Image (cartoon, rainbow over all chains, first blue to last red; front, side, top):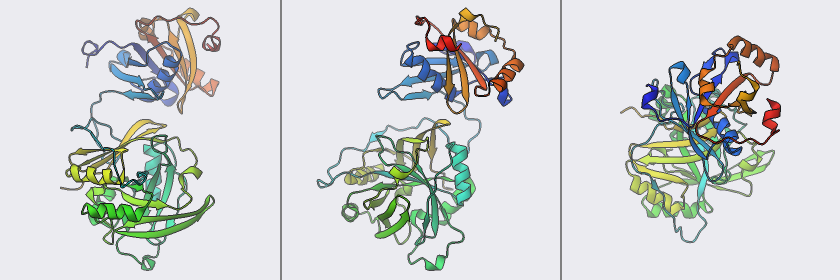
Amino acid sequence: MTRQTLAEPDLEVRAFVAPVGVNEDPVTGSLNASLAQWLIADGHLPERYLAGQGACLGRAGRVHIERDASGQVWVGGESVTCITWHGDAVSRPDAGAPVQAGPSDPGGRPAGALDHLVVMAASLPEGVAWCEATLGVTPGPGGEHPLMGTHNRLLRIATPDFPNAYFEIIAINPVANKDQRTLGKRWFDMENPGLSAQVAREGPQLIHWVARVPDVQAAVADLAALGIDRGDVLQASRATPGGLLQWQITVRPDGQRLFDGCLPTLIQWGDVHPAPSMPDSGVTLRSLDLRHPDATALRGACDRLGLVQATVKPGPARLSARLQTPKGLIEIHSGNPLS
Amino acid sequence: LGLQAQQVLAAQLLDNGPVWLGLLLDSPDTVLALEPDHAALKDFGTKSGHCQRQTVTGCYSIDIALEPGSPGLRRA
């Protein structure tokens, strides 16, 4: 690209980074976020502007900056895909018109809410390494799930829009005694050969989400009325320093997530929710977007549960979450099944 | 950087993980014309310890009015 084809920027930026081994960086998204916070707050620039960087290196780039009503600064720009690594943070514009899940009337009961995102890894150390490389933070401790032979690490990603939301990195525990499992297949399709192979092939990835509901039995009945079998309601508990965690969660005997992971598993917590006792992670959830060929049925199910935080669009099945991280705003999404 | 003091309108330490020394310069042309001594900048970054990287910016078509004695100017 030449400068002539680009809009004139409101701000010219150069970044000198000799101590990291390169004299000058052509485009630095995270730096532009910091600059925006400074220059907008001090009145040098308006709440929306265009920055230019890299012209001196023959790689003129444009960075779009906007500060929203809540004071959050958003950084964006066009890009050229040189390498695609499915399972890693990749941000790209989506096709299809977004359809916001509409308001619901779940029989007068309080609405459901996004509880946590589920990232599956072939092993927990692999999941931790993925988290550090992708989100730029080390996940906090988690626990063991003796019933399922799985274990996890947790990360709080809550915001006012997603209260008590957290991030679960989960893997099959290779040393858990499988014989003690009293159930059918493990939850979240973790024993599904296709999904296991996909995770082994592409690395840790977003596979599912879990929604908390005030009355899990009633929510299961609501879905049954729509012809959706969310499965059995299992009781579980775990002692933690923050108190006894108790929850009820839906698991199908066949372990299936349904809707390729886009329809959430349902959870009902006891008196203690784990998120408030998790430390701030530096990562916050900005949005969850669901795409599915049967978007109408998926949207109907979300509406029935009062889940209005996720957008539902028609298209090939995919979950995408945008997260604000120390590495900037990133998007993670579910992987690609072999066709 | 080879700048005159009057070309620096404001300065701010920016911490987004790495710590940057941010300088707001008098014009985009000044920004684009800089030919820094990168070895000296690296040395500066290493010696200053908490500020390993530098960034310079210049606004187009923005009427810049700084209050005299702003913290940014003193830090510069």
